[in-house]
Length: 86
Image (cartoon, rainbow, N blue to C red):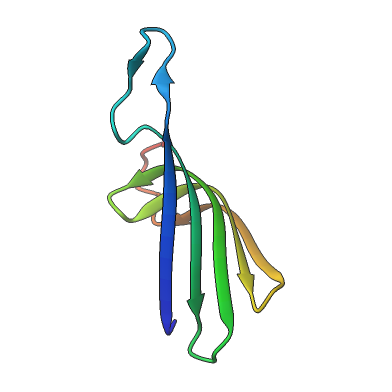
C-alpha cells in the first residue's frame, strides 16, 4: 500500500425504548476510503461499518475495488476472534 485515506459519516442511533441517545460509539458509519497500491493501482473501499473493536476489528458491509472492478466484499476486516461476539 502506497497510501490510504478514509472518511466516515456517523449516524448515531437512539435507544427507542427510552428516547435517550445511546453511547457515542453506538450507531453506523458510512465509510469511504481511497488509496493507491505500490504498483500504482487505485484502491477504493466503501460501505457501512456497524462495529469496531480496539482498532483491530471492523464489522459491517464493505466492498473493495482495485483499478475499477470489485475484488472483495466482506462483513468483517481484521482480527475479530478471541471468542467474543460483536
